[in-house]
Length: 359
Image 1 (cartoon, rainbow, N blue to C red):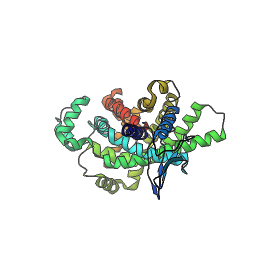
Image 2 (tube, one colour; image 1 turned 45 degrees about the horizontal axis):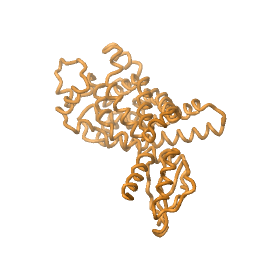
Image 3 (spheres, helix red, strand yellow; image 1 turned 60 degrees about the vertical axis):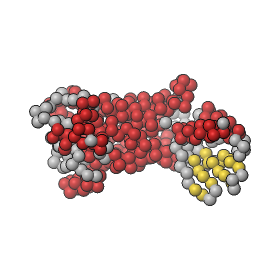
Image 4 (cartoon, rainbow, N blue to C red; image 1 turned 180 degrees about the horizontal axis):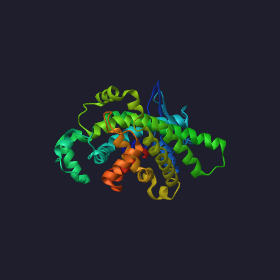
């Protein structure tokens, strides 16, 4: 019975908080990824009271906790020295990396769908298709095509670099969002919740764009073609043809145009959903549902911008770098439908990625 309860406690901690264990003598610190709900607080205290080695706990800080052992005698609950902003940064970085890794094959399907007709895509996929085959193919046909041409590894081109990148990106996103929330709440304590969430979220979208652009440049090139052995070779190719400007700024314009509104929709949708009756209906699964919904909601309005960004970034330096010219070329070649290539796998990817991130 004790074993089952211990397992349940461990599972709840993994689902509800992102735990960072740092050894400081006989103390271990656990950092909350998000506030404990009243349900989790009561269950946590109940578990602690029933364990023989635990003392009863009077209260739990909803922002952060510290689990400490003193000579193996007592397990108590103490306050962490980490600020909520620091906790958000740590939690965001870990959640971001995990979310990207889990959903990366779907992101690859999205990118390959977007660039399949582009001359620069090259690689085994282009060679596998007939030279006169210009028709769009479905998601499952594309899966078979990628597997036949590149094998399982074809679904994971650039995954290592993007997981590292997302650790930084999500850390900055969650940290800057939390920081701006505090700034706005301090300056305008009676401001509306919706407006506060939106301002903080768009600010985090602006800040993270400067990290997203270079990481996604490398990711797009590796996903679109198997001509690159690893991230370092891809970066070397970019630097040799375009220099640091090509790595850091190619596609930055559409990245900003995509990230700023999408982050606003993302955090606002999630924040509002977490304040609805969903928390009563789904309990501890609410962050998963709200995260998936927020992920889809934030991508639909900006998806055409993402297509343009991908086409601009999928080049070794000799492609079009003007977003408006690329839009005109895409429209003339494929019509309005060209701006929604790969939308289906992107929606699946958004649900998986953001549900994992928030859960």
